[in-house]
Image 1 (tube, rainbow, N blue to C red):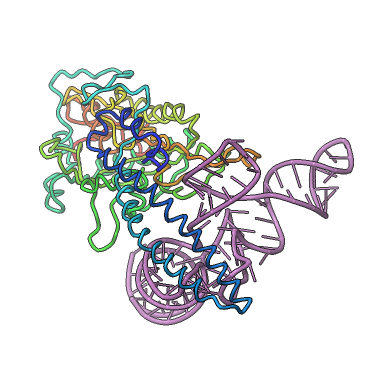
Image 2 (image 1 turned 45 degrees about the vertical axis):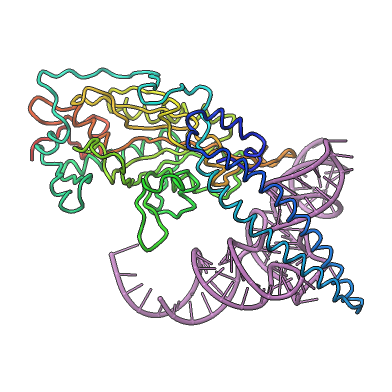
Length: 428
RNA sequence: GGAGAGGUGCGAGAGCGGCCGAAUCGGGCAGUCUCGAAAACUGCUGUCGGGGUAACUCGACCGUGGGUUCGAAUCCCACCCUCUCCGCCA
């Protein structure tokens, strides 16, 4: 989101910098409305000044017990004119505000230009891809034959794109959540939060899901609530409408939440298994920091997510998303992709982004410079977040990468304490 | 869901419809004093937008949105949130 000053002074600059990212933005309408707002604002403010002075004069006359009928009549006319102009101004501001909320963020200079995932840039790879004597089985086969995954009953209870974990499978999911949270709070310095799973419209607007992506969200029928598609929403909005002290920054939170996504428009994609569900678990990392340090923080945060995969021994790679593949609100995004043997490819398991001031501007999250010194002005913070990690996909990666010739699955040693010491999941 | 109370600046907390962007206290910052610190005293201290190199100046903001009025933090209506009591409930 851009403020009125940016839209007025640098509309063409924004348009050029966005390139094809801003292809569906009605730039001409915005320009016209910006000018209209300016002239209307000037007129309204002049009239208001007149009204204020006139009213003060009326007050003075009243105190002096002098007749004020002329002034009152004149001010009534001014008031009527203000009301009329304000009606128009309000309309202009509403449409302009809505349009401004639909302009995507500017990509950082280091982001590769491109239109699709094939234009993403691989940054690094980690780990050794496991070799198998027989073709590796997909996780849904492994899970169902072990009796820990049940898609038929999930469909009976809810429908397509839902999963049901049982026994050691449910335990493994829970183990992963606890393991990730313990690691991020214990070793990486994040504060754990357990936020609401339903949020209001303002929160969704603050992080950028609304107004443009309403179709991707589950909405509650009789109340103005939405199910969160990611913990990013409640956790980033924790500090909405706040001014933070600079010496409190960076603020780092981690949160486990279920995430709910309609997955509209993804018909036919990943229809089997745990990869793409309407409900999935995720441990999220969120950071608030200063503009100077946000890119350093992005590397850190990405490293924290990568560490989980390293510790679990799962091979992965990191890619920088190109301008065309990045999300609406991001200035730069690294995707971490884990190796899936059954698909013989890397699949996204984490997405780590710096939003710079884009969300902070929408959600009005600022910080006071200088920790209370003389030069203390306020400025928007930079916000970041990343999955650390998507829990269901981590479970998929474990099932597939750690599958054994006898059909069992070897549990990574870091998780065993969370599994009651269990080393291997066998058919029950 | 029912009954009552309340939402004001960084915090606490005043505020007869005009002289209220808002008393007072606390916090923070600067200064005096001190070798330094504490205490005491003095001064400064909200956000956003417009204009101006600047001093400054204009406008908006007292939960949100409407309304009454020449004029609203103050009156009226609706909604949201918080607190107390009752009911219901994990």
